[in-house]
Image (tube, rainbow, N blue to C red; front, side, top):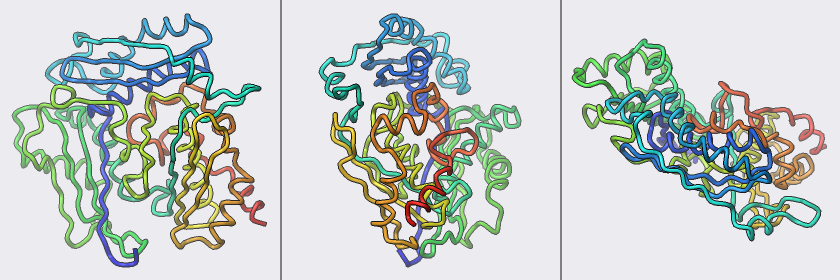
Length: 391
């Protein structure tokens, strides 16, 4: 769009119930991959009040791996709760006394056979369409609204864990509204912080503290519009949080996990899925491609869609839209991408080294634009290859 407009994205903290579910599912995935790199994992988690349910379908070549992870699943979940900051029922859930139910099943033999071709080549674990995106609005080549939203809840967690603001609790959400003029950021118009807090605090004092300690360091006055507004706990005191306040499910924060709504989403969640599931691995590859295109200066914005059929290794389609910012035709970019990047599931897993226990760290604060952790799909090491492919 060339006209001025407002655009909003949100993020949630690691203590949000949906993110607890994502982290538990990915911690289970990591436990499998740590022992068997080719394990097939589809893990779902429900958190509700004082209950955690972990279920899914799994396949391992070594049955003892399946049994060993199943035996540890409850303690893995409890540790995720502790790491997020939950200590007792008063904070949102008691990690030592909550009920944990584990319901592990074996992956369907038909699905397993259907995605492995003759010769051992891996086909897509399911049909689906995945999107990747990058733009030059931030140093991490992410859209500014989601990038700032993540920074706000990450700072909330940092201040809580350090003891600088000991009255903060693990459950929190942020929302950022940015004013654009065409493709350029013109300023931040609104910031919303909803954060769980200890009981009995004065709301005005909480607003002052959150503004001074969380918002102001990340958003100096020159970055704000003339109409800038701050909202801290706009619904009133937020004292009951975590699973005691709301139910959480794996895969319910797919827009938080990706680009904050700045580009389309194929609908598939990430957490709890091993990299044979293209819902996850191809979305990582799409981000890798888009980021390298923007980092190479070939476009200021890059949207890529990749689609697959279940059991088929090569994608059925690859599409790039540079949103009018590319210096070369998008068709040329598509041809270069097909030369430079391997887009089969095996190729993606090998190129991005995905058969490792790296996933729990991605399950809060977004899977993309993470300069705080080393993620292979965030590297910009294919610039020269793309430029060479374009001639």
